[in-house]
Amino acid sequence: MEKTSSSGLTRTKSDQLVETLAAAFKSPVSSGEAPAGMVSSDGGGATLSRKSSRRLLMAASPGRSSVSGKNNTHIRKSRSAQLKLDLDEVSSGAALSRASSASLGFSFSFTGFTVPADEIADSKPFSDDDIPEDIEAGNHKPKIQTEPTLPIYLKFTDVSYKVIIKGIASSEEKEILNGITGSVNPGEVLALMGPSGSGKTTLLNLLGGRLMQPTISGSITYNDQPYSKFLKSKIGFVTQDDVLFPHLTVKETLTYAALLRLPKTLTKQQKEKRATDVIYELGLERCQDTMIGGSFVRGVSGGERKRVCIGNEIIINPSLLFLDEPTSGLDSTTALRIVKMLQDIAEAGKTVVTTIHQPSSRLFHRFDKLILLGKGSLLYFGKASEAMVYFSSIGCSPLIAMNPAEFLLDLANGNINDVSVPSELQDRVQMENSDNETRNGKPSPAVVHEVGQTASIINRNKVIIF
Ligand SMILES: Nc1ncnc2c1ncn2[C@@H]1O[C@H](COP(=O)(O)OP(=O)(O)OP(=O)(O)O)[C@@H](O)[C@H]1O
Image (cartoon, rainbow, N blue to C red):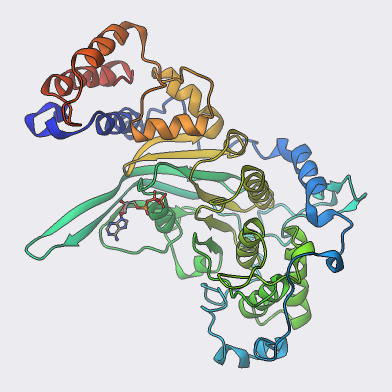
């Protein structure tokens, strides 16, 4: 491997590992030969087996309990004169001059809502059978967004992105993404996983059409077409840092979103009903009259806040929903609930792509597809459920039982402490570890040489060793 040259002496073993994994993964992709973990774009019927868990979700939803808004212990909004925005004014556009859309947290332009008949010709209408029953309450809950959407198949091939960092004397190119390939179908949730700084948000922005730079290469297609203005109204994007207006209640936030973002073809009543439906779909009934809150005023919980952000986007019935770290800062149960909700959204025919930082094992298994990034390179793309099998097939498996997501992140980080090494090379690695300890945090020339040798074994046998 080229990295054994003298210039490579300062590189760490973890750098070697990540690049080796990327190389081991990349070669079969470019040659058209799928690795063990790679899946075809057909996606399969991962969504079909979810009905039972969805029922549990409905039953567990706090929004389904008999507690009415009156019993809510959260701080409620005091209806001060300054904050009382008239919905009529908003719908007629007058309130827009008072409160900018940015301050209300609406980052998107006004969007179309109805889908032309020819676009939805192929989409299957929802039947009553699809409506899950709420076992606990004994009634039916409407599924997420019942209007049909244009199904969008997202495919990206060999996507690379670099930035030019301008210094005082000279400028330097920095590679952010390097040859990322993948795809996601309507009805699926694709998770982008990787250590901090691996390029998840950048990739999400690229796929969501939010980053247009001449330094982007590769292809990104939506139903085999490049990004167009028309797609803007079909894409929802939930950013990591939300900008919700702290003094509005949940209901007001979503109602304003509906009034501002839904097309003029809908009446005010229809828009308000859409907001109410979203509140119900996302299980926000219990906190609908609670203020969002902020630094100075206590409001809804973190999980509820995330759901409001998601509601702001699904209110326009997007075909493609992108989310940047929707579970960050949440406990594992709340995070699981958010991901179950994303599954529900996908089941309604939408294509969902989300970045995820450190999912619990329960959460990890809920994703249909996974992209694992390491330092901007693709380490894995395929079914999430097959990621461990794939890495095990190339000689990488955890020595102790552990959360697969944790293991994969360790691998992407180059942290190899709890990872097994194929037996035929184990002795050499042990010798290497004991004899060639790093000096001053840098690998000795012997270590680099040894890693270079083992790296060549990877290319021959698709065995990963470090
Ligand atoms: N415009 C830019 N100029 C310089 N560096 C950039 C730019 N955009 C991204 N980067 C760098 O690219 C790398 C990937 O950034 P990105 O935000 O995509 O990572 P991430 O995986 O989402 O990280 P985190 O999980 O911490 O949010 C980082 O090292 C970041 O500093």
